[in-house]
Amino acid sequence: MTPPLITPTRLSDGRELIYFDDPGSAPRTPSPDARGLAGPAVPGHLRYDELSGDWVAVAAHRQSRTHLPPADQCPLCPTTPANASEIPDADYDVVVFENRFPSLGPGTAELPASLPWGQTTPAVGRCEVVSFTSSHTGSFAGLPYERARTVVEAWAHRTAALSSLPGVRQVFPFENRGADIGVTLHHPHGQIYAYPYVAPRAAQLAAMARRFYDDADGRATLLGTLLDRERTAGERVVLEGDHFTAFVPFAARWPLEVHLVPHRHVPDFTSLTGEEKDELASSYLSLLMAVDALYPTPTPYIAAWNQAPLDALLRPASRFHLQLTSPRRAADKLKFLAGSEAAMGAFINDTTAEHVAERLRDALTKNPTRRPADAAGKAPA
Ligand SMILES: [Zn+2]
Image 1 (cartoon, rainbow, N blue to C red):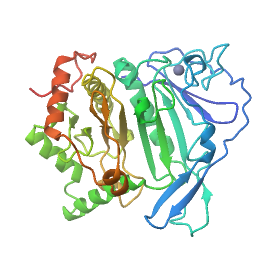
Image 2 (cartoon, rainbow, N blue to C red; image 1 turned 90 degrees about the vertical axis):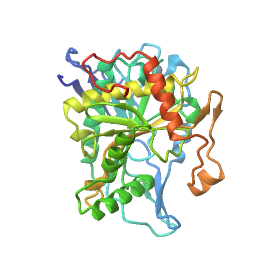
Image 3 (cartoon, protein in one colour; image 1 turned 180 degrees about the horizontal axis):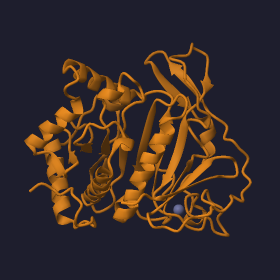
């Protein structure tokens, strides 16, 4: 397909904003941001936790950020005479901009390996917001295929750009969907964090991947092997295409957990071919529609795009994939992370991966998709 039209500009406080308009859109001349915001943002700080070896971002300044504003004051809707939003223009398809209240950034720099007790350092890195549509209501699952494809292109563009910033070790695009998991804006949107360190869970997964890779003398990868096993077993596979397969992992931790894994060993969005991106957009839409069809109301979820860390040791063994999880365990019940999970990271799942996979396959077959006829990603027979 032809690429989207990419138009970068700056907001009045100096933050970067980039329009990604669907292919075939007319060239855009960005409107100036008339708000006259003072900038740049005040950074938070980072503290090093010697107990765990983890970094903690302290963002006390974020307490004043916008929380569930009424629709007529939404910062992600296009600007109108009554609402000077974050997007100065009257319309857009997809837009990405630096978060006004970032947990990390706006500055970027190398982080030391650790910091002595009692010392802090500015919270370097970058936090971006990705608005999937100019429409205030709806969700990613309701986007037309072409728009989802533009979002995929935006994720790839931002991954390339953020990966090249000084000190960035991991680029993490994600979406929190639903007030139940702490969403502060209803407008369909996601975020991208560019961390100056490898986040704890990413580091754990990457270390396991590296160990497997070394044991196999570089001839096999962990996620590639797990993918082969799941495709052979079949019972946890939710949908299978030419380039991606979605399955509920054998040892799923959450009441709802699906992984969407590329068949080719690629580190991140930037390494996908056009054909792979086409299928990714359609498969992801199908998956989200199935997730929303499980219950009478939309399912809260976290869509976590796991990309290989930008670390010479970890990167070769790590494979790009999506981990979609939801704490929902019944129509009106959420799983709360309590003692075992929150304090110890030891998950107890009330359901089996096989049962969840069956429900998702069922939801897929009962719900017609809006994917183009030539796109792959069919539910297995
Ligand atoms: Zn809005």
